[in-house]
Length: 175
Ligand SMILES: [Zn+2]
Image 1 (cartoon, rainbow, N blue to C red):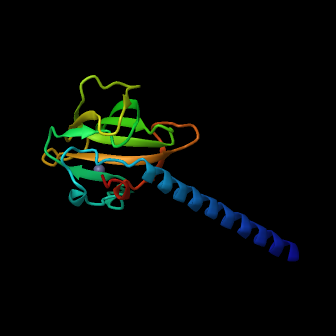
Image 2 (cartoon, protein in one colour; image 1 turned 60 degrees about the horizontal axis):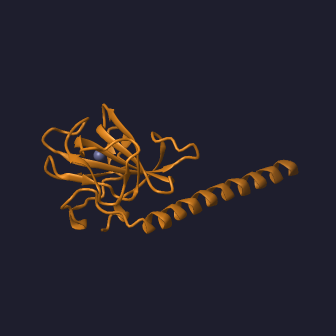
Image 3 (cartoon, rainbow, N blue to C red; image 1 turned 180 degrees about the vertical axis):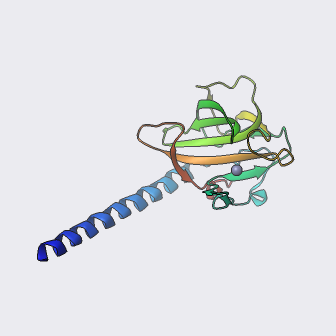
């Protein structure tokens, strides 16, 4: 009986330490991302035009991105510095770009593009504000509602471009 109580106490401590470590790494992410001074990745859109759509439900799943509405063909630019890792076409995202930040800790994801910027290729190094593509409605976006779907992921240790932990971009898009 006593031994079980000790084990449970140890387990509780272990779980609490795990949760603490997780929230500390989330706080580190926030600090690091804030130093990137990300720009709003759609030309002509200002902070007051943005709406935080990160927590909205889209069917059974959480949106985990921000939708930035703009007319079709509006230039999309890199939110931060970093390398284009993958140009990918998917059923939900349509024409997409995955870009890693310079430390390769985060991925920036741009979806529903109408087309890519001329010359854009995997491996291209972009500076914040460099052209990357144009707003569109490819993938599962409604034809009459072109927008950029923009997400930020914390990459895992294997730095796979297709998986990571979503971070809400909204608080960081203040330039
Ligand atoms: Zn979206």
